[in-house]
Length: 240
Image 1 (tube, rainbow, N blue to C red):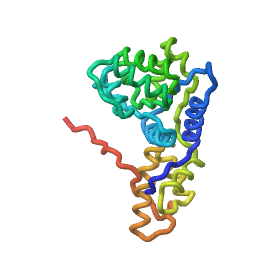
Image 2: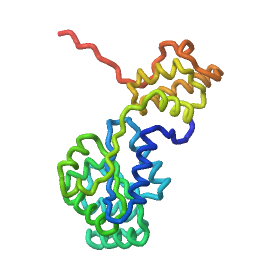
Image 3: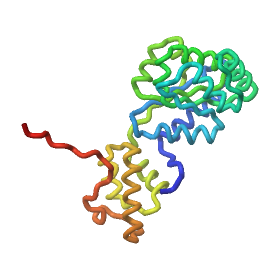
Image 4: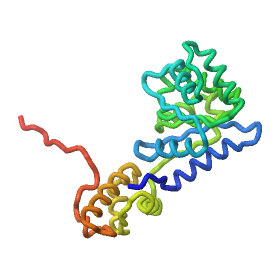
């Protein structure tokens, strides 16, 4: 599989939203929410956007506290990590005021484990104006929306949903080194239930099959009923 970025409609919408935040006029808020189900390509797209736009990437986890969040930010900024929050907030504000950069926080659902984390991030944003993009599941977006003081700063709400057949073709042509026929692509698209993560898995298996059999194009007939995904087995109920 090629290590390229498939420019699907979801990806293009997200990049446009982030660029709108970075180029926004004075007085317009600059925070965004990206949400969607697992496997819809959020993390891959954010990593691409972060590299493209020279952003700061943070990945929250269940052990995060305000101090550990700030420590991670210091590492990304290439600055010393302190044991106390105040000097790290001051350092972050100074660095981002001198050189504004978008901040991407993946798995942002964990920020709700400590309310102070949202408040600290809001403080840094309010002072520096650096765009902040929070990435999570739909439930996270709902929680943010319920916090009026925080939600009013969000001007971009981007949802990642299943890709259509045109995006599926873009995905296959961008990533797969073996040509995938239209009928086989439709089969993968339907079987994956439009989920881009499952489609990538299926295309990888098709590519491997094509290479092993020296096929320039893999068709539905040649693929037959081979498994596309690495799904878990279904166990029958044990008899009493």
